[in-house]
Length: 315
Image 1 (tube, rainbow, N blue to C red):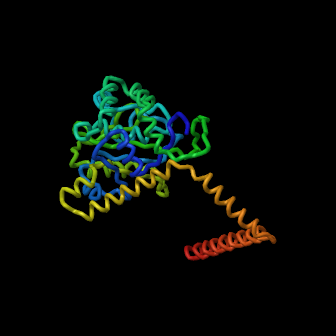
Image 2: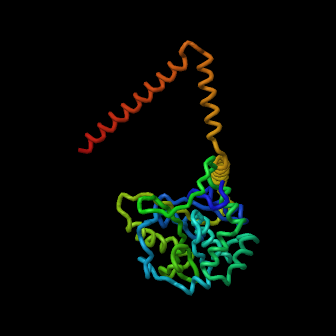
Image 3: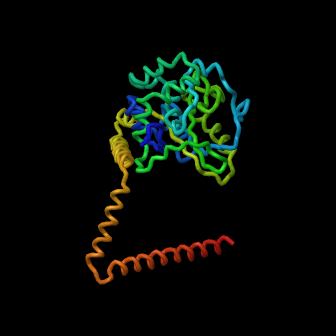
């Protein structure tokens, strides 16, 4: 991997173990498959949500936000960092929630030290400090997918590129805020308490999604909540505890797989399969390749026939 910031997935298991690796205690992420305030409320306390969307590269920054109002005072009094480097926006979004919730979340000594160190900085310097933090960058990169190919080239995105961006929503000082490192300041939406957050944030997200064409479905929403195992233990729900432990085991397995590059492994399997056919002799390898091509063509033809039937049904 490169020495810069690598792309990470918008995944509950990735984000949960990322913040755990940074020293945060008793916090996890839950994926929301629909904009459902009741589902969000059932996971209370909810510290914030992380929203991933396709960023319109052709758009220019507006003097005023399309929804809400800029709060430049909050940019100084709360933790708000400008995004100064590519690929860091996911980690920056979750830190925007964590470092504004130090009264409710144990963020650990390293993140608390980082927050204290940058508390007097303006937003641009906070962003530079975050981008240059070896601790945060190394933990972030440890959850990127392994790849044998390193592309060190940097170029600006064009309107034809699919570029994705993370932002955060949380409650600060009795208001619902949108925290986007590409904006000049936090965006205040409405008065809000932590208890009202599930009901207040959903309409804001709905309005944002409505800006896109109806066929656009490339969104992802993750809620930052208290470790659900704590709630399960409090009410003595053993089935729930078991489900949450199984979820954690699955996350750990998936995160372990992300750290491995399987191209060499697959290559060795293919070489072994070819070698076994060559050992059989008498044109077995050529026959094997011919059979594989025939099966591939049959599957392709079947998909085309199925597609034709579907098209006929919709006309």
